[in-house]
Every structure is written in C-alpha cells, then in structure tokens.
Image (cartoon, rainbow, N blue to C red; front, side, top):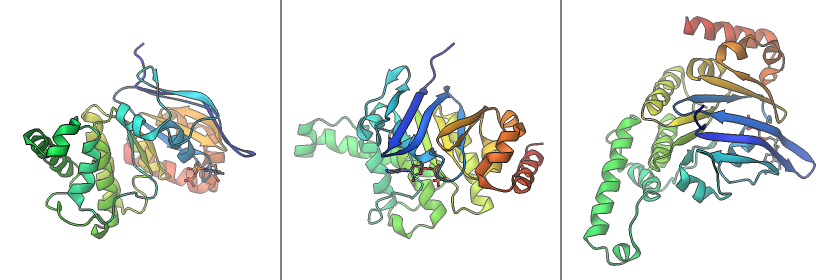
Length: 269
Ligand SMILES: Nc1ncnc2c1ncn2[C@@H]1O[C@H](COP(=O)(O)OP(=O)(O)OP(=O)(O)O)[C@@H](O)[C@H]1O
C-alpha cells in the first residue's frame, strides 16, 4: 500500500474544558478529494487548524508523505500544504496579481544578495513569479483582472483568488474551508469543476462544506464529524446510506437531509 499524502492520526484538541476534537483520524491518498462535513461547531475548522500548524494538537500527529509536519504554519506551507479560509483572508488593498505573487514568493529561492541589489537574478525570479501567478489566475478563471484591488472583486471571485494564491505555493495538498459559502448555484458548479481540475494537476484535496449535494458530487470519500468525533467515513454512497448521518447530520431535520440526499442522488444518476 502506498503512503498517504496526508495523514492525521488520532488528533485531539482541547480548549480549556472543551474537547473540540476527540481522536480524529483521516487519510488522504494521492490524487483524491476527501470531504469533511458535520454540524456547526463539530470541529471541522479546528481540525484544519491542527493540520496546518495553526494549532498544536493536544494529542496525535499529522504526517505529510510519512513525515511529521512541523507545528508552524509557514513551515507547513513550505512543506506542501496550502489552505483557504472560511472567512476569506486576502490582502484587500493589494491587487489581484499581487495577492497571488505573495503565495508564489513562498517558493522563490532568491538568495539574500539578489533581493538586496535587485540584480538580474532577482528580476528573472520576479518575472517567473509574475508569469506563474498569471497562469494560475487564468486557471481559476480570473483573467484580465491583474491590477484590480482584491477588495473590489465580487465575493465568488475573491474565493477563486484565494485558491489561486494557495496554488501559487505549489502544494501537494490543498485544504479548502467552505469554498462555496455565499455562492450561487452556477458559481458552486464552477467551483466543483475547478476542484476537479486541481486534482488533475496532481494536487490532493480536503474540502469542508455544509452543502452535502456539492460534497457527494465531488468527493472520493467523505468523513463526518459530530461533536469532535469521527462518526462515519467512506464513499459518498456509504455515508449517505448511513442512518446515523441522516439522524445526526448537520443538525437539520431528517426530512430536509433526506430531501437533499435524494436531490444529490438524482444529480449523480
Ligand atoms: N481558539 C478556540 N478557543 C476555544 N474554543 C474554540 C477555539 N476554536 C474553536 N473552538 C471551539 O471548538 C468547537 C469546534 O469549533 P469549529 O470552529 O472547529 O467547528 P466547525 O465544525 O468548523 O463549525 P462551523 O461549521 O460552524 O464552522 C466549537 O465549540 C468552538 O467554539
């Protein structure tokens, strides 16, 4: 069996008296998309924060390609894990292109002298970073907006821009925290297609979403967190057929969940 690209082993996180995560294990194999769902307060974002070094898990380990990840967000990015945030975190007064170049600079290997003297190596590096950033903007569907301030973009475009910035760090793993929040159905569909295309480039993905129709249509496997515990994991078919998911899922009345599940089945058929 090949080593998973990302592995969380028995991760727990305690805040004061609150056990936000209780021994959560998750495996992401290369070239896969894993969905993480669960009611508000289930611990999904806390889990992402543990995966990315923002929080140090109280117990447990996070491994990238078999190596324990450092407990520092910058080093985790450097190692190959990139993320977007539930509440968009762009640099609002920077342009669209500059926002992506910030991500790109993580991967630039400029020596200190090159940046000090702004010599030819520095200029070559900057040009390569600009070209790659433009490529990524085109990839996410944001053409001809380089000089626009990011705060002026519509909400859906800001989410896409955050993805481009994350991709600019050349990640092996991309973590997306509610990438379709606030999007209309067309934008949601475009985001699904974008995530498929990201996977095609060799990046493995974990997605947190409340929209189960989106998750079931997108993911190779789905993990359900409830009150900090992993309730069920498996293929979308297995998860949506599990009565515990229908019962406990997302804090919605079962009829509403069943309706959404039926709709998702219809979409997939
Ligand atoms: N830094 C923190 N300090 C204390 N408690 C926290 C902290 N971060 C999260 N929590 C608590 O941990 C629990 C899990 O929160 P978390 O935001 O991870 O849930 P979630 O599943 O992402 O929810 P949502 O779907 O609403 O985003 C909640 O009870 C929350 O209040």
